[in-house]
Length: 250
Image (cartoon, rainbow, N blue to C red; front, top):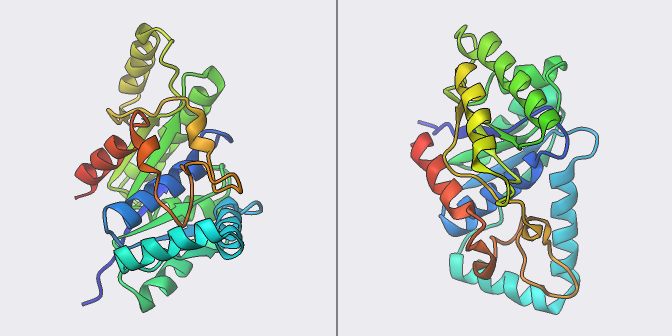
């Protein structure tokens, strides 16, 4: 019997909240560090950020001897292929995922979707997710937009039972450690009043989240071909986030 992968999306309708970065970070960590089989369907039309990142990663690995060696060493050590990144439109994202599953068994397929709830294709695909994680930050506009997004999903798709969604969780991202914790306590109360749930793990506001492969060969954080560099994982909370997500999804 064919195993159905878990469909997961980091989704929100506010640009710059970190959904694409989170998709890549979690997918790469699960695939290259935790040993799961992962795929990504990039249907974030028209920018296709994950597809573009994979293209940049491939070009550097092909052209740069340092990254070529790292890639060869990793492939030999893990005896594992890179995870596929497929491009699609929001309305046919599930069909793209099903096509991937015909050739290989996946544990997780991640979907990077456009940031809108007003697109029928986006809503259709979101309704087929097993789990949705919506990044939020202590910015009033981001928080207001994401809470509205999550509230609509909860009210229209989840509580009505017309969707496959097993869980919708908010995720604190870009958290400034200097901000007073009282502010977050107020926001958490608002989240609770809306009958929504936030993950315990938060991700700090750190420049490391933007570190990609580069000709300077600095430690990499965000890549579709490599996991987060071990020197950068400490303090990022990414390992804690993946552990909490796995605990929920199991």
